[in-house]
Length: 262
Image (cartoon, rainbow, N blue to C red; front, side, top):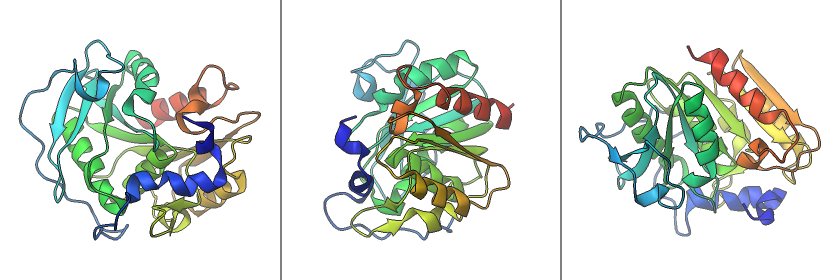
């Protein structure tokens, strides 16, 4: 991701990926359960094109998920385990940013879903996340964890209180301060609705102020929660998991996933 994505101000700008460039459509309040269109009954097919064309992954299965009130979203699933992780990317990035981590997760015994944001914006985007989770569950997943970086982390965090049935947990990388720049929705009140197990990850050298991350983390009411601040890391979002970053974030993520799933 470009370095500009690491500024505290850009944490707000990143939310443009959710707010869009025009007016935000009516969105459900954060505490409202999300409903979605039924999961497609169409079988998945090999993903040789589409969102994974730039980073083809052997065995990836493509899907198209219908979205209530929006356009269908596309994605891929890797692996066939009953425990699954849905990965969401940051604004200006792509699902491919998570492909390396996805491959590692499959090797560790997880099903992984990568997906591409659709047309909905603001809090309404959680309907798209719900549709992806529905696809994963329809394919055989009995436990689902949401994870993402920056805006994807915010999407995952908010989805942790809105997706139904409730997910098993949420991993939030580099999300704090604001969500949806057009309407300037503070993330702290949204974090205050998160009651499923939660892992927050952030680098102490990221331009996203660590004080903002601590503020959001403190607001999370979940009894099972953990904040990992990676010393000496300027990584933002999925960059925290790169091998070039100081050790800690990836191990913490994998340990969290292993502990809250079976």
